[in-house]
Structure formats: C-alpha cells, structure tokens
Amino acid sequence: MSRTNTAPARPRAAAGGGANRWVVLVVLCVSLLLVALDATILHVAVPSLTEDLRPGSTELLWIVDAYPLICASLLILFGTLGDRVGRRRVLLLGYALFGVASAVAALATEPSVLIAARALLGVGGAMIMPATLSILRAVFPDRRERATAIGVWTAVAAIGAATGPVLGGFLVEHYWWGSVFLINIPLMALILPLGRRLLPESRGAADGPWDVLGALMAAAGVLGCVLGVKRAGAGEPLLALPTAGPLLLGAALLVLFVRRQKRRPHPLIDTGLFARPAFTTSVGCIVLAMLALVGLELIAVQYLQLVLGLSPLETGLRLLPLTFAAMAAGATGSYTLRRIGPRRMVGWGFVLTAGAVLLLVLMGEHDRPLLLTVGFVLLGFGLQTTLFSAYESMLSEAPPRSAGGAAAIGETSYQLGAGMGIALLGSVMNAAYAPGLRGVPGVPEEAGRAAANSLGEAYKVAEQLGGTAGGALHQAARQSFVSGLHVTLCVSAALLLAGAVMALRLPRVMECPVDPGGPEEAERPEAAVEAAGVRAVPDGPPRSTERVGKAGSPGAAEPRVPATREAIEPAGSGGRPAH
Image (cartoon, rainbow, N blue to C red; front, side, top):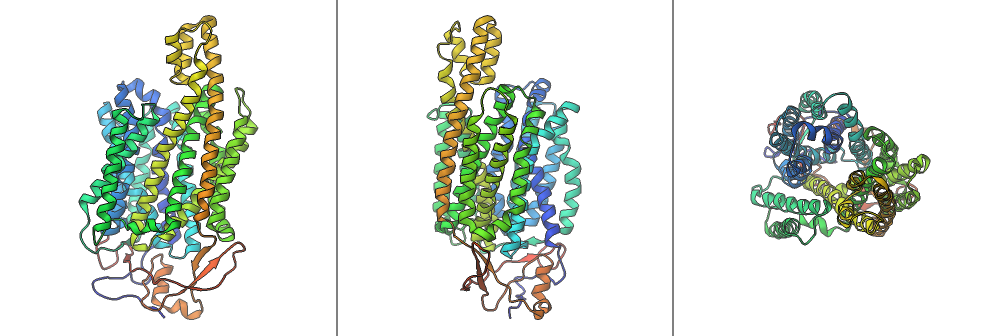
C-alpha cells in the first residue's frame, strides 16, 4: 500500500483540501475559451477599427499579428516557468494581465497603444494556455478521466475559435470595435477570484536553477520562425530578407536551444521526450491538423464572403456546423479512444477529414448550402477527433514533472501549424489563382497584375475599369479563385493523408493505470487527496497497467514505471505559498 510523502522539503496536500476536479475543468475551460475567442474575434472588426484609428499598413499588420506572435513565442517560457514556480500562480497572473490588456485595447485611441495592448494580451495568453493543460494533467491522474477532460478542453478551444467571428460580427454591428475586447473584462473579473479559490497549485521538478537564457533563446527562436512563416503567408517571397532572415535566425536559435538543453543537468524541457515515438508523432499530427484547419478556414471565409457574397455574420453562421461537429467529437472522444486506441483514432480522423476536403471540391461559383454543411460537419468532426487524440497521447507520454513543458510544446506546435497553414495553403492558392487573370480581353496588363494579388483586389480593379472589361475581369477572377480553391483542397487532402500514415507510429491501444479498488481504498489518505482533485505521490510498489484496445477490454498487465514525484497543493494549503 502506497503512502504520501511527508518529508519537510516536499509538502503534500492535506486530505480534503483543494477543489473537485470537474469544477477545476470548468474554470480551465472558461480560461481557454477567452484566449481562443481573442485569437479570431478581431478579424471582423478590422474595417471598423481602420476607419476609426487610421493605422498605416504596417501598423494594421501588427495590430492583427501582435497577439499570436507574442503568444506563440512565450509559450515555452511560461510553460516551463509554471513547472518551477507553480502553474496556478502563473495562470492567475495571466488572468490579471489579460483583463488589464483588454481594457487598454478597448479604450485605445492610437494605433501604437492598440499594438502594445495586443502584445500584452499575447503575454497573458501565453501564461494561460500551457497552464490550463498542465493543471488538467495534474488533477486528472487517471487516464480515462483525463481523456474525457481533454475532449472537453479541445472542444472548448474549437468553440472559441469558431465563435469569435460570429460574436465579433454581432458586437461590431451593434456597438463599436472596442466592444470585442471589453467583453473580456467582466469574465476575467469573475474568473480571477474563482481560480484563486478553486484551482489547486501544482509544480513539477524544481531541481537546479531555472534556465533564463535558455527560455529567452526559445522565445526568440519561436518568434523568428512564426514571424517568417507569417510573412511568407502574406505573400512575401520566401527568399526575401524580411522573410528568410527571421526564419533562419529563429531556426538557428532553436537548434542552439536544443543543444543547450541536452548539455544541462536540469534542462527546461526534457529533450528525451522527442525520443518517444508517440510524443513526437502526436506533435507532428497537431501541426498537420492545424495546418489544414486554419488554412482551409481562411480560404473558406474568402469563398463565402467574396464568391457567394455573404456578410461577416452570415459567414460565421455558415461555419457553425463545423463548431458543433467539433463539440460532438470532443464529447465522444474519450469513449472512442478507449474503444479503438490512439493509432486508429488519429489515423481515421485524418482520413475522414481528407474525405471531407475532397467533398468540398464540388463547391463552385454558386451556393450549395447542403454540400457546404455536410462538408463542414465532416471536417469539424474529423479534425477534432485527430486533435483530441493527438493531444491526449502527447500529454500522457509526458511525466507529470514535465507537464508544463509538454503543454507548451503542444501549444507551440498548434501555433506553428496555424501559421504554416496560412503560408503554405495561401501560397498554393495564390499560385493557382494568378495565372487565370493573364490576358483577360480588354484588361490592361498592369490592371491584371494588380488583380492577381487577391480576389478582393480584383473586385476593386474591376470596379475601377467598369464596362465590358471590368465585367470580364470580375468573372475571370471568380472563376480563377474557385479553380485555385479546388487545387488547394486537393493539396490539403494529400497532407491529411500523409498525417494518417504518420499516425501509424502511435500505440495501438490506450494504456491506463489500474487502481486496486476495494473498500480499503477509500480509507487511504491519498485516496481522499485524489478525490479532492489532487494526486498523492506513491512511495510503494508500482501499480499495474491496463491496456484498453479495440473492444475496451483489459489486456495483460504490465509493470508501470513509478510515478514521478510532483508536489500538488490545493489553494490555501500549507507548504509553499500558493500565490
């Protein structure tokens, strides 16, 4: 029978302290919802914001990109810092920072102030995102329950990202552009005291000093890579200095960061995680899934608005089936994972998504609501199934002591995949779209080159030309965009099928720790701690492992590696200060 560790240097939670783990999950999901909303809610407010603040083209680019760039670059820094100083502490500070930055952004009267506020929002988001996932890893030690919790967590992320444009469109139509930030303030004012009261504190290993230089190298490296990828996605030449420079510098810094971590006795991130095929494959699957999702969503929004002529609010409503399907996939993900295992779940998720993408090739210049609805439902369900199982496998492969670092790696791969999706699929779209605008009858060569930049630009040029030439250019641009969309969808389907092949490296079955059970289990002090949502650290012999395969039945028991020692303290308990 295992016992809790009572050594003075590593205090443990008292029985009955802490919060119910499902209440903790609700608080964490509300946190994630706000961060996911803020990533997309500004997009529909850009025209109104531009008219009010009159930013330059560079300023407007930074208003939109400051949040994702700063957030992506600081995920590893704050994820590993949370492992050292306490994940709850970092999360609560992120709440406060997010609320303050939202108020500054809503009341900004100058572009520079709004850029600074968006950057500050990125810092707050980088504190919140890995902390939510690492706390979830700590309060759900049982893999079955953790799979259910991750299903809810990933569904909430999908809801936030897809609901952002709808909510933003409603707010901009009825209020002013600053209202898209103002809604964060009352929610943060509510969740900050709730989180302080309900969330348990947890830490990983605190051996040795925190590698400040390594954390800054990782932040600068990710920033350079994401910035270069975003510039490529905006249409700048890949070999141009503003694109290639940040990419090469970022890649070099990340290589130096990895070498530094291998040499240090107490690294920020356990590079040995990447020696585990399941962990590396899960990270790769997250990148591919996000590459497809964000690239396709961007192109779908352009298609719905510029080809079918829908308003921003109507566009958001058309994308809601994708959100509902993602919610359903998250809700059923835990059951599916236990039944068929990670390999089949990720693989078939990719195959289903590729099938949905190929179905959407049937889209044309005219609206086909039923086809779009079916395609978006299959797309949302397939991608969410893939993301859920990949996140669950990645997090389960990481030991509890490295939960913050693993969560940061997962979130960074999420952001990199999103940026790469815009860059890669956007480049494919542009390459397929531009040739169709060459040699349009009656259209000057200079006007044709300007129209080849984008469909929106082509419509403006056509309006300026007017007459027969303008009408011919307008029609040619629509046809070229739809043709380019078909090519892009086929490329995306090929990438998704490559993801299905990659998933073959994942485990066939889901391995779950088995609790001995029995009446005496409830009498153990650590059982009371676990019921409170925190995990006691066993000192006794390791428990066995149950392998859940296709039918969800237990297989042969295997020895389990003893649990890594990790201090998890409920809010307000003794031991290390919680805040």
